[in-house]
Length: 394
Image (cartoon, rainbow, N blue to C red; front, side, top):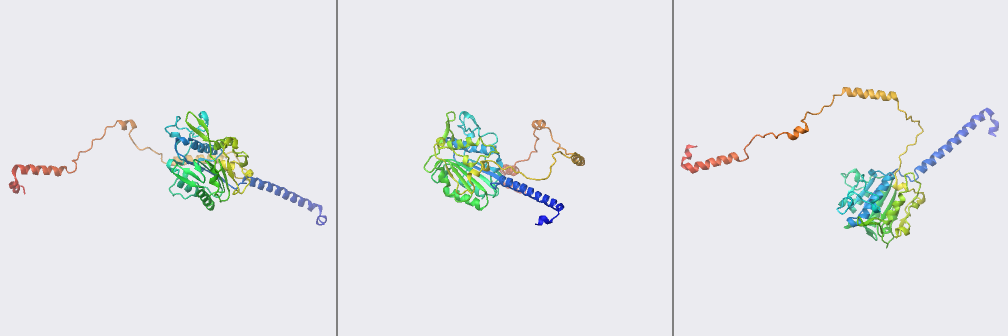
């Protein structure tokens, strides 16, 4: 009825406005959907804590496990500044290593996972239960360097990988101490209370690994293990040249899967499995504490890194403004001319310094020399003249 009463000239702008509003709402809805999809996990940064708890040459595979995971997360985008690497032993420099400065994860020495750019944050006897728990909870001395800190926040997705020798409810450190599943669960709860993570992926490759996540009770934790309670985690890739196994089966096949992943991959966590036929042991997982469905969780949500993207509608010119560039160049030249030229301090050439003769020092009698000389004179005087001539002196 209202439209029938309005003249045709006034209906046209109204229809145009309605069409514009509908198009705008559709575009805004698309942008919101894209933004929600981009930030679907709610995290803005990624961290990784990679821990090898074993020492001694026969545990070579545990160091190779950890370095292989380190190599994969770096390849997928997590920088060294966001990785805390803890190695209980330095296999690369072990006297038994036939190839010094190398750690291999494949037979015939095909892949050196030590590389040229490994940054170990905690090594040797620094890898303790106390230091590990302090890294997780952030309760470390103020003098601790930045590279040894887990500087995460409530928007951080954290990957925690551990490997070593363990049993039902514990994991050994250095063959001298243990961390229990209760201590680990309480540390994760402290992290949640302190807002130190958004989501956390816990992976452990050890015997009876599933026992380590049984006591977890904090939200947003997904846990994977190489073996169930009562099962062993088996080694893989024996190398006669080195004399030990190079990796554990579970980590080997997980990393073989990760080699097919790239930073833009859409592969989800449901695809991250190791069949019993390959692992021999039965891998375990726990997702009841995790809020999202694993099929909606990308592998790169934990093994990759968030690309910081700023969405803008402004037009940005990629061509430099020549006038601004020339004016700034002239200003810099004028500032350089006004400054006094820097000069090196006068010094002798290196060759002259090397062949220069040492300067002779002024001779001074050693301490007590004068007193000893006077004592010698008095002794000679007494021996010659006796005490009766002392009155001629004083």
